[in-house]
Image 1 (cartoon, rainbow, N blue to C red):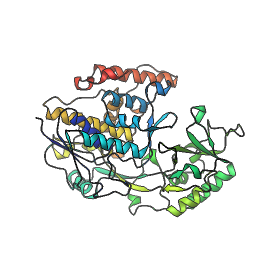
Image 2 (image 1 turned 45 degrees about the vertical axis):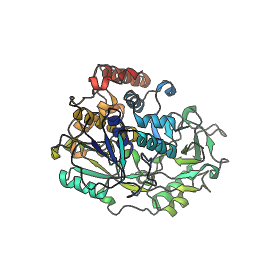
Image 3 (image 1 turned 30 degrees about the vertical axis):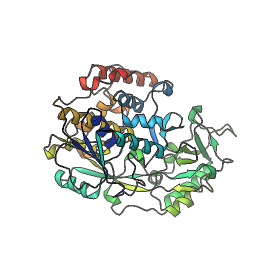
Image 4 (image 1 turned 120 degrees about the vertical axis):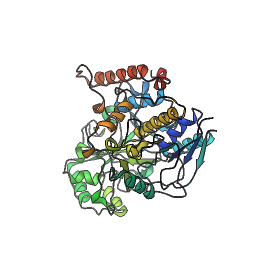
Length: 449
């Protein structure tokens, strides 16, 4: 019988790590503090609750229609590793064009069902205030409980970093004015988004209202920092009048079918549940006060009378300074414990699938340690290996959490100008590296089609 291991945190990474261990016949004690102790962003006690965007990034396989992305390569590697989180996401998918988006409630319910039904997993609801003794994985996520976060800061000195994350509002489909909005995907790909077009005059009025709106900033905001990939819309506006038009409100590829012309700016809404009754404002993470959200976002054409069922919020986010404190297998070097791993966003990755990948990695590493096997090494050419390489080699003085992207992959041996061909070359090289890689990782590589 294998030794039992504790996994602290029932988010995406914690559930993935617990699943990988349990599937290898290792008893797991999965500890989640919710619902006994809630966070500022979570609303339920379900495992793997999705609190920000409901999009898990680009699809893979035949669904991708030849459009290969780094996010798609990462999903292929997770699929090869028989990821629980990816499987549940695909089962609870809602229409979102080229993205894998999920029905939040069905997704969390399915993950909870699969975890609690596994004979090798014991689910415990309690708060941990310090790393446990014995084999463990810390996967407490961006909203690590203050007591545990402080224990880590004390143990690591000032090596951990904090930044602020933001959540976008969700509105009801029936409250959207479709006389002003239209349904279309960018460049004609699908028709899963609702688009609210703006004239130059409407955009400038909206911009002015946004930059002068009252904000509900955290008390210690100035000492934190944003992750660039999840900037609040008002923080983008602060950077200049046109910043939003080249970001989440870019109109390219979205001509208004009533005029045949592109608008000055466009706000997109993406389906948020299976029934199609809820939509979230894409890229509109915000820290505005709730009353201000109602006032300012009502200036968006089509959302004049929108019913906001979940307001945008900002919350503190915690991760370690990975290149300063992590070893290649996601263990905290200053703690000098070979049986304590960390996973998920706590490692310094950003994104749902990236966090899931770090859960899979930590689960495999811990399983190998407990079963007396050498710890596996992911090839740098893979998406997961590239993320791990970034965590090892980034500049500790300027470390920022990172999404998977082709820019962190090792360069190709030859230059390929065509974007699709270049992405395909990265994907093929990653697949081959995984097949030739560590025997532990090759176990699922035959599924990397």
